[in-house]
Image (tube, rainbow, N blue to C red; front, side, top):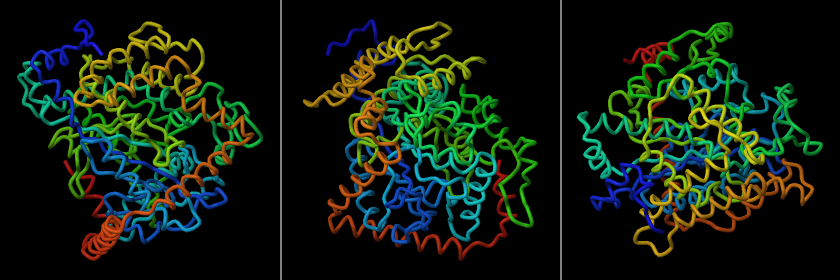
Length: 528
C-alpha cells in the first residue's frame, strides 16, 4: 500500500519524515467484557456470584457490574492484541466450569427479564467500600430502573505507546510539560472519537432487536418499535439499539455540558455535576428508615454514573476519587465503551475488530482535533442516535461540520485516511492483519448486509427464531465450546490462587474497617 503525503496528517507525516513511524506500535490494549449469567431456560440467574471465582470486590480480573448476575471479565493490558484476546479466552475457560447449569448470555441486550425486581443488585460484602458499591447501584435503580443496567457491552482500553509521546511533543513544539501535552492529546483523541465514533456502531453494532420482556417495567418505550415476531421488536435498519436512547440515558444527563476541551475543564464540569443537587433525586431521599437509597441526591452520585462513549482514565489509588486521580496524574489511557458483544464470537470480540479499533483510535489521535463548540455535543449525539437506530438505511445522512453528508461517504473518507496508519502498524508482518481488517470494513461500508446487525436479523428470519431463542441457542453453543476446551493445569492453578487471594483480601478489608459508613462516605466525598 503506497502512502501518499497529501493525505497524511501533520503528526503522521512528521513521524514518517523522521523515520519514527514505528513508534505507533506497542500501544497497550486491554478489554473489559460484561456477560449476564442466565439459566438453561434463558432466565436471568438469581444465584449469588460463584465463590469459586473469588471476590467480586477484590479480584483484579473477574468481578460483577451492576447485577449479581452480570459478570465482568477484565484483561491486563498487553502490547500484542493476541495476548489480550488469549487472556480473555482463558478467563472464560476458568469461569464456565463453575457456572453449573447456567451459561453466559451472548448478546448485549438482556433476555429473560421479568421486570426490574428480577435483576439482583450486585453484593460486595460488609466493608465500607463494598457497601458504597452496592448503595451506588441501588441509586441507579431508583434513578433509571434496573433493566437498562443489565445491558452488556465491550470496553476497549487503549494506552498510546509511551515512546510516541516525546516525538509528538517535539513535532508540536509544545511549550507545555510532557504530562500536560499527553493529557491534551488524549482529550483531542476523545473529541475526534465523539465526532466520528458513530462508525463503530455501524460496523460492529450487534443489537438490532430486543426481547419484549425488556420493556416489562417500561412498556411505553416499546411503542417506538416495529414487531419482528410475537416476542421480539426491532428497527428495520438498526445497528446498535444498546447505544440508542433506550439504553443508559436520562433526561438530566442529556442536559449536562461536560467539557472535553481540557483536563481541568473535564474534571471541573464532572465534579460540578457530582456536587449539584437534583430535585427528582432529592424526592427519592438519600436515607429511608436508616437505610441508604442512593449515595447522594445530586445529578451524579459519582463519576461512573456519567454515561459517555469514551472516558479518560487514570488508575485510582484505594479510596481515591477518579477525578482526583486524573487531576493529580493526568490521563493514562482511554476507555472506549461503544462496542456491542459480538454474539457470533465466544468471547464477544474477534482479532480483526480489535485491530481495526486500535487503528481507528490512532487515527483519532493523529488527526487535528479542534476544540468542541457549544453546539457540537448535540450534533455528535444526533449522529450517534441516527446510526444506532437507522445505520443501514440507504442514503442515511449525517451532519459533518454543519454540512449534510451521507454516512457512506463519510465512512469511506475515514477508512481511506486510516490506510497509512494500518500500513505502518503492519510493517514487519507478512500477514498484514491491520490492512486486512481495514479492507474487511470497507466491504461492510459498501454492503450493509455484511454488518453484524443485518446478519443477526437474517439468521433469525431464516431459522424462524425470536431474538430470545436465537440468543439462548447461541449462548448454549458458546458454553459447549468452552466446556470442551479446559484450561491447562498450570493456568488453572494460577486462577484458583487468584480467586483464593481475592477472598482473603476482602476478608482483610472487612476486618480492618474502623469507620462507620456515614463517616466513610463523608470523607470520600470531602476529597479535594
